[in-house]
Length: 294
Image (cartoon, rainbow, N blue to C red):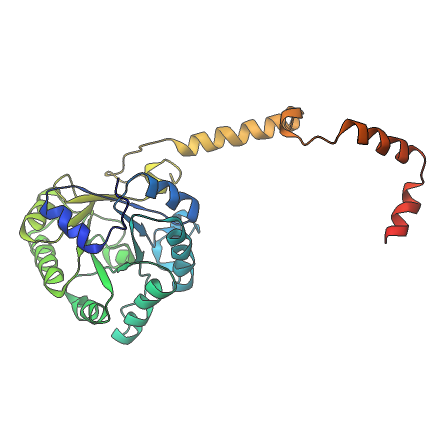
């Protein structure tokens, strides 16, 4: 496990060495500490927090201030992994000046080392402006959740010849403009393989098959905490949601039945002093004494 902070250059070097890049989302201090201790290369503070943390139906509702709030918490818990802030809906597609300012907030206020943006060739000028402002950028193509109303839902992308061609060209253009990696989401594995082999920067897959340079999952999904829906690519690596439910049920039952807290989980008052307290209590008017204190 690395003891040095991972950088965007390290992520690129991992591809050159043929080493897989391990990526997860995190949204708070406690989870971020656990993920970081696990040797994860890159932690994305994803706009997926809109759904798994805040309860919205999609990623469109989360605001810049909410994203910065969670990014601050994550960055405080991370020592080794590269922290990337996910730029939310409308934070970077209105104009380049606003995009650079918002990206800068993730770095300056949030403590992130890079940002992620969704889109292909059409947002390359904006990405170029960010990089010119010394901000490292991760790309994201395929199923871009901020465009679900355009797509008609969370649907697999790149399934036609023309759509596949566009994805390949988008990836090449993102590389040329200077992104350090590209998330490929919900695209056929064959197209992801072509993209991965055609560019020198890493591809990070989520629903894009085994040939990407790395993989990312939403931590609440892969641990079985968020189970509102289960896409084809998702594998549960734990049933933490069930474990939490069982723990809560046990807590409720033990409190109801007087099992918790027991003597082991309670603080002790010295017995010799307790005798004095009891004697004092027996010989005073407690209401009168309380009134004196007030």
